[in-house]
Amino acid sequence: MELRHLLRNPKEMSGHLSNVVVAVLIVAYVDDNVPGTRTPMAHLVLAGFAAYLLFQIGLLNLPQILVTEREEGALLRLRATPGGIPAYLVAKCLLVVVTAVGVLALLLAATALLVNGPLPQGPAGWLTLLWVTTLGLLAVVPLGAAIGAVLPNPREALALVMLPAMGLLLTSGVVFPITSLPGPVQQVASVFPLKWMAQGLRSALLPDSARAAEAAGSWELPMVAMVLTAWAVLGFLLAVPLLRRVTRRESGSRLTARHRKAARSGAMPA
Image 1 (tube, rainbow, N blue to C red):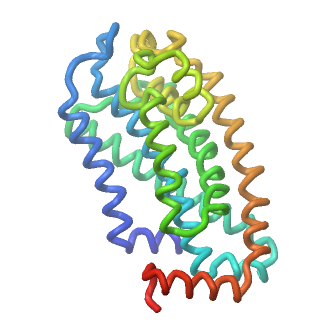
Image 2 (image 1 turned 90 degrees about the vertical axis):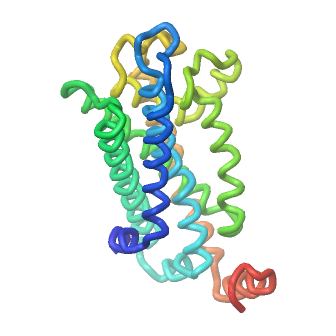
């Protein structure tokens, strides 16, 4: 039902498609090679942009969905449903995962057909793409759910999450080689999952010669797996209790009070 609703919502679909169009245009107009290699810079940018799209769908879109449905009373109804919170979290995570994988597949296919974008070479490349994508989504989707559980309202959800996300976009080596950034910035970025998601996707999409542009001179795939797994575990440990807590605090009077406040401010019809 969630997927059917998404496919029938032109506004949401156009948002995902516009990201693919932007990526194609960026890759089409990026010239030169990655410094120290013969790998086109456009291919590095595409791998990083693909990682950021996965990161964005999990960490930005999901909190907005959760906060909006909380305001609509969906979480309040879960209080009377046995096992409602875990089932709800799994359903939303699956929706986001399917959406993210679909957008990634469309992005890679469009860039490969239109602007000679890279694709994984051989079974090993496709396998790397699969496990990095899976672990990357597991790392950010539960974290997005945890963030959505504590954000105050839909209007503030995007603003509160977007600024840190844009900071990570600029400091994680997504749109240019991470070696061009100062050492302290690289160390801070290495704590967060986006840097490792982008590095893992580069290992799947770029030739081995592109490793020269990495901070360690290698893809560090074991470290990619460890960091993403750690974030996945942390996200699940945070998301379920936070959603349970916000559900326990929900009541009809709280929901009505929020609706009245939003109506007075003009955020929703009276």
